[in-house]
Structure formats: C-alpha cells, structure tokens
Image (cartoon, rainbow over all chains, first blue to last red; front, side):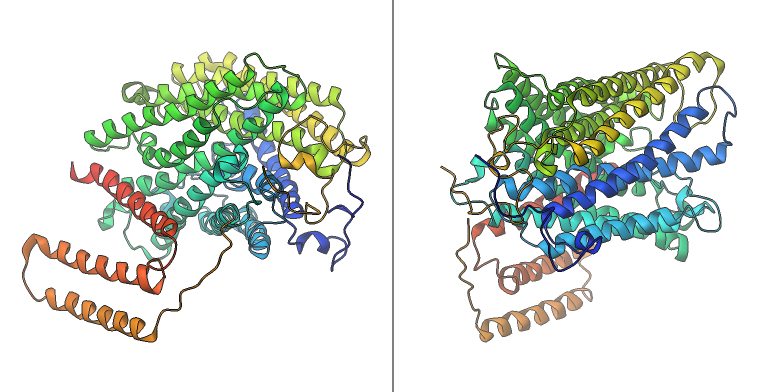
Length: 525
Length: 94
C-alpha cells in the first residue's frame, strides 16, 4: 500500500485561502482539526486554572487568592473542562476525523451541519467565557449551577448559562450527524456488526447527545427564566423545588459522563488490538456493553443526590442501578485484558497510554462504586474523594484515551511521525504527575476535607503538598507532549500508510488522507 | 447501505382526514374539561393527547409508511422518556 498521488486534504486548494480555508471548510478532517486546536487551546486555559487552584491549596489559609476568587476559578475550571473540552472532546476531534474513514465514507452525511456545529461551539464558548470580562464578578456557582444559589448570586451566571445552552446545540447536531452517517453511509458490505468499535461507541454516544442534551438546555433556560422573571420553578419561596433542579441537571449530566467516556473506550478498543497484534476479544460483547452503558447510564443520575433529601425508594433504586451500570464497563475491561492475553504486545507510545488508561480507569470506576454505596456516600459526599474519583474517570479516562488516540492517529492525521523518545518521556512524566496529583485526594476525602474550599486544617497539609507537587509534574509532562507533537507535525519524518500495522480502513489510505479519503469506496468482504 | 429511497406520496384526502380528526380530538379535550371525572380526568386528557401524537407521528411524519426501524427508534425514545419520568417520580410519589 502506498500514498496516493492526489493532493492530500492539507494541501488541497479549495474555494477559500488562508484561515478561511479552515473555518469555512466542510471537510470532516479539517473540522476535526478545528476542534482539536480549539479544544486544546481551552484545555491549556482549563489546566492553568486547575494549577492555580493547586497553588492555592499548597498551604492552609490564603496562599495566592481570596476565597471568592477561588470559587470563581473552580467554576471556570469546571465549565471549561466539562462543556468545552471533555463533552465535545473525542467525538468532535477523532469522531469527525475518523468516523467517515472507518466506515468507508467520503464525509459525514451533513457536512455543512458539521461546520455549523463547530461554529456553534465557538460561539457558545465565546459567550460562556465572556462572563469573565463583563462588569461584575465571575460566576461562582461551580459548573453545576445548583439552584437556588445560581439564581440568587450577583455574579455573571447568565452568560455562562447561555453559553452552555448554545454549546448544547453543537453537541446535538454532531450526534444527529453521526447517527445518520452510520445509518446511511457505511461502505458496501459493512454490516452493523462489521463496523469497527470506535464508530460503535460514537453511535452510543450520539444517541445520548441527541436525547439527553435537550434536557440540560431546557434546565439552563429555566434557571435563566428564574433569574430574570422570578417564575418559581426552583425557588422554595415561590413554591418551587431546588431538588427538582438537581434531578433535571443530572438527567443530562450523568449520561454526559458516558458521552465523555464511551468514545474513549472506543479509542482504546482500536489501539489495544493493533499493538497486541490480535483481533479484539469479544467484539459482540463490547458492542452490546456499549449500548447497555448508553441505555442504563440514563437511569443512574440520582447517585449525585444521595444527600439532597430524596425519598428512600429513590435512594435504593439509584444505588442499585449504579451498581448495575458497572457491569458493562467491567465487561469491556475483561475484553481488553483478554485481548492482551497471549498477544504479541508491542509497547509503543499509544499502547503506553492505553495500558495506563486501563489502570486509571479502573481506579476511577471502582472508587465510583464506593461512592455508589449509600452509607459510604453520606460520609464522602462533596469531599476531595469525589474530586479524585471523577478526575480519575474523566481526566484519566478521557484524557489518557485522547493521548492514546492522538499518538495512534497522529501519523495518519499529519502524515508525519513524532519523536518516540520524547513522546514516551512525556507519557511517563504525565502519568507519574497524574497519580501524585489525585491519589492523595482520596486520602484527603476520607479524612474529611471538603471539596470547593480554599482553606483546610493543618492536618491536611502534607497530602495537599504532594497533590500540588503532582500537578506541576503533570503539567511538565503535558508541555513535553504538546511541544513534541507540534514539532513533529512540522518537521517529523514522513509516515507510512500503516506505521503500526492497524487493520481498520484508515490504515489503507494515504497518510495524510486525500480530500474525500478514498479514491474508490472500498467494498468490505 | 440503506440507499433505496421510495417515498410514499400520501394522498391529500388522508391528510385532510387526519387534520379533521386532530381538530375533533382537540374539541373533545376541551369538552371533557366540562365534565367532572375526578382523578381520571388527567388520564383522559393525556390519552387524547397520546392518540393525537400517534396520528401525527404515523401519518404526518410518515412513520406508518417508512421502515419499521424508524418506528422502533421513536418508540425507544418514548420508552426512555417514560422511564426517566417514572424514576424521577420515585422521589415524589413514594
């Protein structure tokens, strides 16, 4: 297999020039890269905000900021990381770039709608971030906008709410586009159960994006209405119910965790077989567990609200369902491990990320079960334990899978190889920093340190020093990774068509791909 | 895959019958508010609304004439919404 003679998508001269050739391009690959650059830029902002929080927590009392500033910083850190990074994250970047290629299509079904999704993403991000630059204080509600505080605070919550509302549309349109693309554009011969696993996870995700996102859209508008018109949906003084807000918020926001993690699982399901030189173990089980996670994931939202004052029936139901949703996730872990078993494992950068994903994801998942147990939850609710748990899942899961994916597909995206030594060094530094940053927070939570506090008692000092130190190491790893990838995209060695020996369709086409991916639509046997 | 397109052209007469039925059901739902049915009045109102939705889904939105797959998808969405509502009301009713 050799590279095509047709111009690749990066060299292709379309209607527009310069930056306009990017921001008005309907090519799914360029849109994927637009998302990559936007999301990475926001990620750097979110990471700096996180680092500021860790700097504040390096010693008890005020270190670098006041309590109010700390509230604003963790709110913006949350809004940026959740709404601007991990929710669009892998589907918007790798889904856009690779979904059509993996199913043997020339583009997504609605290319213009795809571009509109990116524009909505940018507009939503601009509105949400404008809250920082307007008169008045930055939002200080946390990314969850819990009522009644969210409609009573004097800070700039409105732009943040409206920004998140607009971002929801971007997510819905991407989900819709992916569903239609997979139904209508699979290459001849590619039945549903011949589809690679990454598209399958995007399919499960797309349904969640389509069905759950409107709930948060309406809920955020209800808070806007509450602030502006004093309607009384959630205000007890007007007959409203603040717990109803929590229900509505988590009806979206828990499935949103699966919007984040399912595509991450898809990436891992592509990387592991390639580097174990084996077919994935239990393809059908992984597909079914993906759909089960997407479905059961809708019904577990109440485990975020065990201490909110729900009825006992609800408590039991949500705790039971939470334990149930762990089963399909565990099925996946067993399948990945069975794929590795007796494989001819090749340890290269993407595989390091994939294997460390298994490690951090399992810690995140199992600590989730700890929190799903009602009696323990009462003790651990709103402590540093919860923060550590969801960073292991969301950052450990999505982040590690993202880095596995970018190191796996980088040669295909840019047609260049990266410096493997620096990439491996970046991984080990990042991995070590990550563990040092979040592991002490499990201990802190169990010992009773609440989350979202800028101060703590002296007993918690040592573990906080370790954690803050870990944050700096992790950021150092991140800097190594980003610089290495930037340099390699410019000056790396030319990549072959299939540098890792992958078996899916993207490894049969040029690196980088031509404009419409395939000179001829492949027929799957 | 699934590229065979055969759009059923629904007759004007069918659309008209559905429109008239929808208007009749609307009038009926107004009419039943005049009768004191006690606790079941909300069930009656929702049932009329459900029948109206079914007519719109199946004829105006062509689900009746399209592949069964699309009906299954819509039914799945309605099932999901029902389950979410039931589970939410576990907190309020029990």
